[in-house]
Length: 207
Ligand SMILES: Nc1ncnc2c1ncn2[C@@H]1O[C@H](COP(=O)(O)OS(=O)(=O)O)[C@@H](OP(=O)(O)O)[C@H]1O
Ligand SMILES: Nc1ncnc2c1ncn2[C@@H]1O[C@H](COP(=O)(O)OP(=O)(O)O)[C@@H](O)[C@H]1O
Image 1 (cartoon, rainbow, N blue to C red):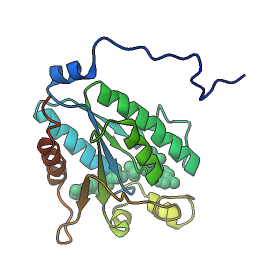
Image 2 (image 1 turned 135 degrees about the horizontal axis):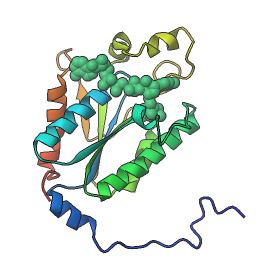
Image 3 (image 1 turned 120 degrees about the vertical axis):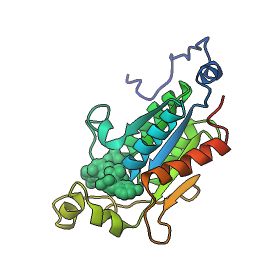
Image 4 (image 1 turned 90 degrees about the vertical axis):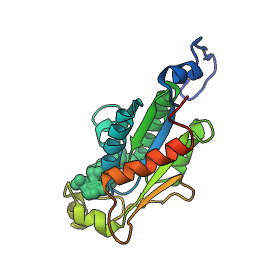
């Protein structure tokens, strides 16, 4: 009989060193910064800039980038709704482990479906999931098109491309929204600064 998804006969083993002790060692609070948005909206740019900013403040972070995860952990997944859901589920579980280790885990994935992001949020204790919405216009992302994928999608050579013929569901209650200011894109440093300010105000950067 298959035991997949059945926790029968599986027991949780407590570790004597707890999360609070690890956080004290690192002088920070383990959490997940989840960056969601269209392809080309600047998720990876923000993730890298934020990682650098935190590093310069002596804070330990680790970036889980959707593109990179699809080279390893998620290499067997495509872009059907089911595959995307599994992609986000696995990443959410890994991010939760990093947060439990005391790290600031920065996950940057399109993560287009609200229910999948909410499921990741539900894995973490209250307030430890910081959802960042890259609220950039589709036109801007399409004009950038750094990988030429929008062009291929418009030509019908890629099917089910997010924002073109696959949906993106914007967050309803995200913690942080990155958007144009007077029609101008904030610099990577400004975007990271917005997240760092939130984390400082909420006490994440001390134990
Ligand atoms: N059909 C389709 N739709 C959207 N994106 C596509 C697709 N096919 C390939 N790509 C490239 O894959 C990157 C997105 O991977 P993610 O793991 O973040 O996607 S998802 O969260 O599972 O939707 C995404 O990277 P980013 O541009 O960095 O977002 C694309 O380069
Ligand atoms: N704040 C920004 N200012 C200027 N260029 C940006 C900014 N954010 C992203 N870009 C550029 O836009 C393109 C897409 O950004 P990227 O971070 O790869 O997006 P995503 O990870 O969401 O696909 C890249 O060429 C990047 O250099």
